[in-house]
Image 1 (cartoon, rainbow over the protein chains, first blue to last red):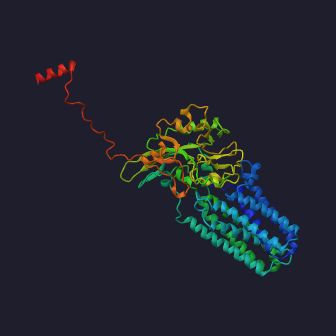
Image 2: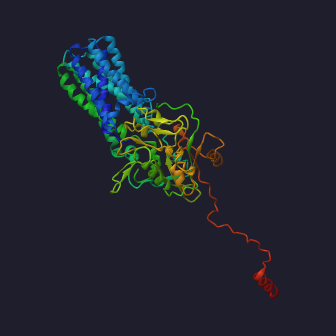
Image 3: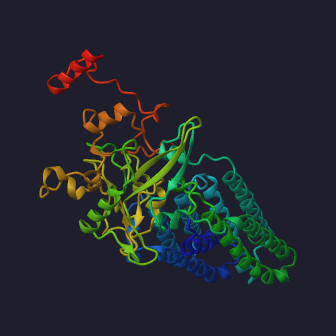
Length: 301
Length: 248
């Protein structure tokens, strides 16, 4: 699948923002930094939303996407994002009430879940169609949001060892689940092959003899993306190192040396973001779409 | 509404005969021609007369080489357009309600005034039936020529999809697949019509008829028996025949 920059930025940034909102909503630590952190999370989440409209053919009609929440995960995502951002304001105005905070956390995580379900519902891309997909999205959002939360708390009195340990566990859990996701994706999952796509070649071979078009087309541009697959292994290592190893080490150092916390967590957050961007890029670039079986064996596909 | 109807009164669709298709692409060109000129917006191209033209097409013909283990390879031309699935995944993913399946005849359409061009429906379709219009930024797909089949301004024989009308080998058939007595339903029953990618659970309406098996001997021309070998001709040939008989 074509890894559109706008979608990668959207899922990564809004994941971070909604993850941080979940932490802020449920934690009573460091009330002094709450306003600033809330603004930060709000900006991240809405920046992601704005980025997501860049790939639309008609961004001015984006509001229409809120209408079909009964059937469409993309619509549900839009509705949940709006509800969450609205709840942030209500929470702020209520003087950070505890139950509104809990509601905010629930909404924020639901938004991340709906984002992941857009991909996880898709049978045309079998690598995505698994409960592991929302698990990865949620854990990475919580881990990234947790890192930001630790950083915000460190500007004041710190979040404490308990919070730090939870973030550490979440980072490790996120990458364990991602490993399981990769294992499944690399394994023998049933992908619609040319034989079932055409219904031809019972007991024989089917290959594309002549492409239906001499140039490229929308399908090949969107679904036939192959560039970078040869670097997939390297990129996976980079993703795990930057998204998992470095931030985990950062959290451990921050827990061990209180006075270093800010200086360790800041770069850890940036490196984690880069790691998640690499993970998200691979999520799209490595995905194989069923339609490509109609182009199987062709030089262009 | 992007919820799918529980059932549709008719299931209008195509039956495509892979045995008779010769891969001439007349249906492809005819489709493009009709849909770029009629309702709704044109079916655009980019760099149409340049070195690398790209555009939206609603019908494409792939050509496959099929090699069975004990037979010679054969070419099968394979036209592919929207299958107007009963369980259309492209419809339910649409966030705006611009994609819908009609309750009366089962045709899957896009309301181009509502489409935001997010492309999710094209991702959801395993068949590659939807293509984004590069100029309009909205999704385009086969309408089953909804502006022809009900069009009273056209002569009756023209009230069928442009691709069906154009096919010189009658490899494309149009009709109601919900009616077991319709010509298309009978064709499917007779020839063993099948679904594409049944494992996707899309329940496509369009059906494909498999290429007929070829005899192992089909490369040899069968010997024809002489017609009327023993009959006696009359006229001058009869006279010649009798004369030669006497001489022999």
